[in-house]
Image (cartoon, rainbow, N blue to C red; front, side, top):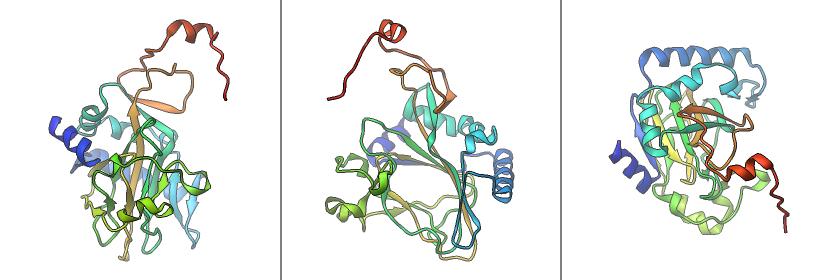
Length: 249
């Protein structure tokens, strides 16, 4: 896995073909099908009133955490993030069922700058090809500097909103993946879903993983532990007493 980590650091993404074993993939597929059929909030609808996205997967079924803990997904994440890994509840954490022509191609980052990095973990429940809108990535774009946020208060950056990023719009490469494949993308690498030109669907899930924040006491449930443990390595006396007062300027 050292070669995979080196490739990820250089390119901003890494493929894990066939990463989800067949029995787990079948359980994932049936669970996602059920959630789309139930249409229980939070969900997002397309223009025809069909469920296009189901949010909050981690709180709906244990199988979604299980897939992040399974080998070789676990091995790939550990190679990139170390032994203590958490998954964020408030970034990604959703399944998408893309039908023909629904989602436009638009390059973006999943985070704004390097101080809060994540690895976006795309899990493909159907084969993802150029024709049905596979993910596109601009290699090495995670090394580009921060310019600004998304309009509307989003958590990432749209490439087309900043002139300095316009040169990226024609540089994205398609990353086809088989059913059960996993794509790991650096949170600052510009990427986009492709355009589905077929009659069928393209179903996938995405999660945001990161190393455990060892400067933050484990006092909230904004993230769930995937592997290892929550290990606080900050100034323990300050954390215990709460005596440090900070004032914004």
